[in-house]
Length: 235
Length: 235
Image (cartoon, rainbow over all chains, first blue to last red; front, side, top):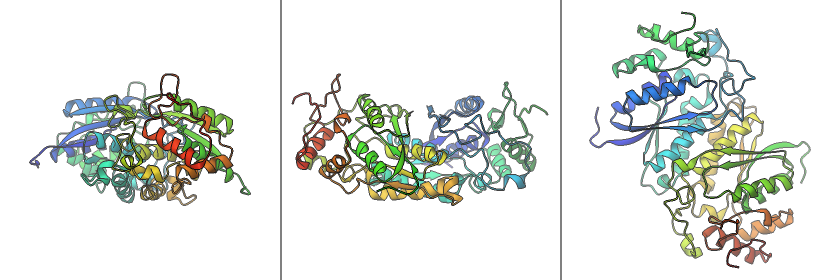
């Protein structure tokens, strides 16, 4: 699927499985990809390294690392040392309520900065790798949040208000299961060995295999009947 | 006007006349004020010093300075060295189109971070000092933008979705002229000599007297029939 004229897109690239797949989808749709990764005070830097590797092998047009310290606000297991990452939860337990790994207003902050970048670039299109599993728990992964942000983006900006352009927030994974995402990524030659998903890896970057993110990922590979390239601590 | 129980509010404090007045209004309405100031890559640091002084004399409960580098995206006279700040414009000229001092998605980024802070604090109320003069030019100062952000805030957050709380974006200056803002601030003992408004002050922090912000400010003092405490370069 190639477009007649290449257009810029900003892709939010965390370094995880979902954002790597989203990046490949944007490229397959013919966009020139400008990747944006945030150092937001997360517990570990392995996912930043993963983002660098993915951006490099996928030959993106540009890759920016932006510092935004959400750690200073705290309020999440991912940004505060005082809240533990839960381990060994069943899918039923994960499906109940908003997890402590929720980072207050994270996707709002990330999309806002992506919008600033897109307006200057210029790019009309912003890609975000949220999906159904996420939005069962995280409020800022739901379709109604994405729709509200798109409305906001076109009211908030010079480009939107002057009507030269219309910003669109693309969430190509939003209705996919983890297994479907992995199969789609396989078709697009995404190398999942480069991605980092675990909330609490060890010092060498090996995945814990027990946090929600690890469990969803490994079950996704099983359901997709694809070999899981992840290196786990206790494999 | 005192409330029976003190409640937290996050107040965006730039160090300018409008945000200083907004802070005083939040206090007058009985809120415990937590001020939030951004170092976003703006041309000069005088307004950050002004924000510190204002927060100090108004005895806020807390004051945070948050780094967020919008300079790296550029696209504005306030964040790029390649775009000059316009000087000597008439009110008619200022009223035509969106000025080059527009910073792409700035208020979206600022409100997003205020929302992250408010959710953790916790605070339901966020105050922003936008006003009618701003929204004649800046898209992200208009009432429809503020309304869209409030809608987003309650979809984006755990606190909003679980219905324990409802976020509100307060813009008490939105329909006021500069003269009306100055009069309201006078009633609330705002010391405008502490504030910094100029887009292009000299090395000692004196205001240029010629940029849009200086002209609107000085005309506001005249119209309010209040002595202007600003120190101008060419007074």
